[in-house]
Length: 483
Image (tube, rainbow, N blue to C red; front, side, top):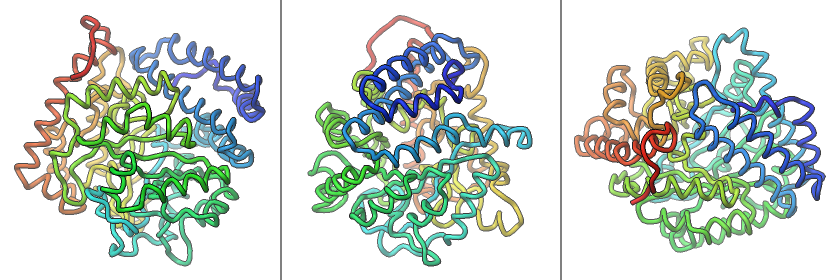
């Protein structure tokens, strides 16, 4: 993001101080920041991003700012937690002080974060779980290995942000420690943890508040009927109870929603958004469109391409009108310049509970094992040099990442596995990528799955290419996107 007019330490420090002060000082700050950010991000031409992309990124930034302000206004985020998160975010994520110091020796722009699933063990057995998690899954990664990954990310790249997924991260125990110990022992990091919320009690919330650097993202499928239908009877009310506990202790949280063909309208409706963000305290949210990977993959559950095109407009409306940071992992990709996988500059890669180095959480193919990499004396930089990761980053570049002018591919359809399976499949074979489970094997060997994925991607591109050209590249007439 181009924020030169506001991205200096004195102004950012004032931003943090005045946000906490509240009242008119906070309101004036937000108003001033909106004006400055518009000039810095939108009115200032960017050499390799369309203006509309910068407008989207401005909208995302303002939405998260308003979400934090709401949480402070309503005492949903405690002062000490805000101080800790704001301090790490300001220096480590926004200004990227540590990363800037690393850049001369690195010689390249590194990823911003890593997603780690320390264990596949889970206290639920949700239908269609992308990770096939359940209570019978094995022990997962050693604590010392996860700590080394966190250390590597900081020492090599200056990365202060780590995402924990699963399985259920709060179930993970190794060498006498767990995810809360990880947060407590790494105070210079922010940890975003995807969790079903069932293990969040008073003791857990107190430890999160004291650490001040962990934010849980709680899973929902919609209202009670849909959530319980997929996740188990009584789960919805337990998630709401976890939210009550987190709010009471001032621990900021978000929501994670899986959208499919049956529930996408429900989870994007005004009443759902208003309840969880404006009334119940979620500071941020992620909508992950269903992909046929994991347990019992079903291509027919994927959101219809025409509905996905409508969702694209609806998500932007929520961000813009409600100032709620509720982003769609695929549809909101213009806000992060397309696909962020494979260790792309500013992006990430995924390490699963078996140590597989995967380009993305939703791409069940491995470029190798992190344990083997470390045993051979390597580090996470070597993960970036694996053939699969390199080939994917080359495709990202060809598709328009950091290209000059308006040569970008359609960033509404940025995903290799979801939108460009016909390109990804030969890439996987050429690099000898290993499926991490039967779902990946089916994608490669079952012609039904392969055909379905290729057809889906083509249909999505056909529907959204005109939108991309019209709205982002200023080609063609204005019109209405949708069904």
